[in-house]
Length: 91
Image 1: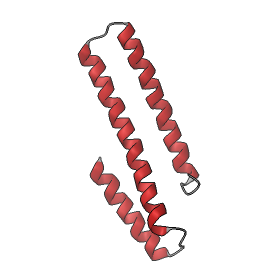
Image 2: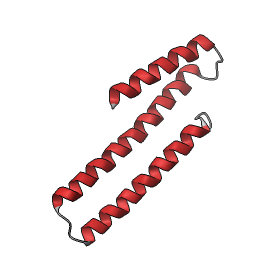
Image 3: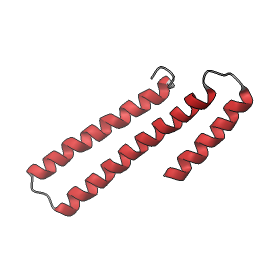
Image 4: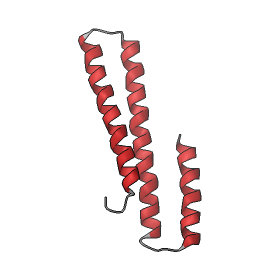
């Protein structure tokens, strides 16, 4: 993961900690015999959060693979536009 921006790694780690908290919350909800509707709502939120993390990593991988260490400003600008379009499309 050395090619991924450290800011992105920090963001992904923070998001994973939130997902971890959601998982603990779901376990507590099960212990408390909360309704299936509430549990499924929280599971849906977790799935969405995990999907967002996957999207972030896919977008970063796109940049790393296409630029492959090149320092071409026009290529970097094109990648930035593609990342923005891709991220907006999958949300």
